[in-house]
Every structure is written in C-alpha cells, then in structure tokens.
Amino acid sequence: MRIVRTVADVRAALEGGDEAGLVPTMGALHEGHASLLTTARAENEVVVASLFVNPAQFDEESDLAAYPRDEDADLDAFRRHGVDVVFAPAREEMYAPGFATWVEPAGAAVGLEGDARPGHFRGVATICLKLFNIVRPARAYFGRKDAQQVAVLKQLVRDLDLDVEIRVVDTVRDPDGLALSSRNALLTPEARETALAIPRALATHDAARAHAVLADAGVEPDYVAVADLDGPTLAIAARIGPIRLIDNVLLEGDPA
Ligand code: PAF
Image 1 (tube, helix red, strand yellow):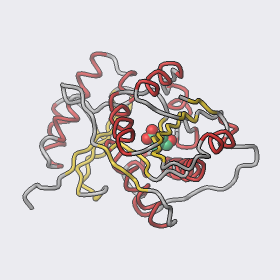
Image 2 (cartoon, rainbow, N blue to C red; image 1 turned 180 degrees about the vertical axis):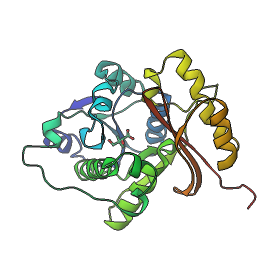
Image 3 (cartoon, helix red, strand yellow; image 1 turned 30 degrees about the vertical axis):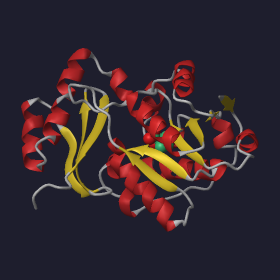
C-alpha cells in the first residue's frame, strides 16, 4: 500500500491508468467504512482511499477539534482491506493559500442537514469534486447513513457532468441497532443507551410515531423528516448531550 500526501504523487501513483474506485473518508474508520472498502475492493482494479478531515464541512470549530483522529489505526485498517493507494494530504495541500473557489449546491442540499449545518454541503461538494478531479475514479463509495450527502453528490455528478459513478453502500449497525459513526466513539455508555431511541424511532417508518419514541426516551430531535434522499426516506438528527447523530431508513416498499 502506498501512502501519498500530494496531488502530484496521487497522479504519479495512478499513472498506469487502471480503473480506480475511490473511498473518501475522514478517518476514524469503523465497520461502516470497512463495508465501503470491501465493496470497492470487489469492484475495482485499483482502490484509492482518501484520509482528510475536511475543515470546510464543519460548521462548528468545536466539532472539528473533537473529531477523532488516529492515522496509524486508519492506515492499518486500509492495509487490512487491500487498499492500494492512500491519499492523506495536509490541509494546505487541499486548501492552498488563496483558495477561493467553492461548489455551492442547492436543491438536495437545502433543508435538514443543510439547514442545521450552514456551509456543510458546500464543504462536502467542494472536497469531493477536488478528490474526483485528483483521483479520476470510475466509481466512488459512500454510506447510506449520510443519505442527504449521497443525494447532494449524485446531484453534483449530474449537474456538472462528472464521469464517476456514485455507489451507495448500506448503513452498518451495531447489534443493538445503533448506526456506526465515527462520532459514536464520543458517546458515554449512558448517552449511547439513550441514542438507541434513534434506531427504535426509525423502525416505526412513521414520522409521528418516531417523534413519540424519541420523546419517551427524552430525546429532542433537530428534525424528524420524511424526504426524498435518494429514495423516500425517514431521517432523524438529534443531539445526545453534546454529540449530534444522524440516521435514516429507506421507506421504499412501505405500503403507500
Ligand atoms: O462522509 C464523509 O466522511 C465525508 O463527508 C467525506 C465524503 C469523506 C468528505 O469529506
């Protein structure tokens, strides 16, 4: 596995021109990422993973500062999953002094996370467009847990005629139902217990009933919403103490 830190080195590493699958990550890898990596490994000649905690998509400095980072553990995980090239740039490599061009997604980026986290999808769309341009992957892999992110990125690809297929991989859950997230590492055992109200609420497949389940557990959501996020989806965001979690379930197949 090659670890490269500059755009020039990524391009040199991929000179052979083999079809590449890209798994963009911010590190703090868990079984959800493992599932993206396994899928990418099965579908591509070359697997590239990126490891970059993108400051532009954090609307709160404290959230960026608290984001878990452990590069050695992440590199081990990439190695175990057969990644060929890891792109782990420094902040200045991605946002050089004078950086001033942004992707401003509307449409799928409006509402829900877009409202709760101003600038979040601008940061995500910009970094993903940069990564697509740097790596030129045939396919890029994202988890359905971030369903609105998937919708925004599919819209980006459509609107800007990008030559990359967005592949969406199902959410991985702990046996108790909690969706895997890098932020789960920040939950106390009590907070984690409370957080289980989120998958319980989603299992109702109904916004009103989901609200009731959350209220019972003393969880006040940022939102409980039915929206078209790459398919009809019931989505929840809630703060458990200081940690904000999101999760969703596809409603496809539900009786109308
Ligand atoms: O889903 C994530 O971890 C991030 O939003 C992504 C796609 C790696 C962009 O920084």
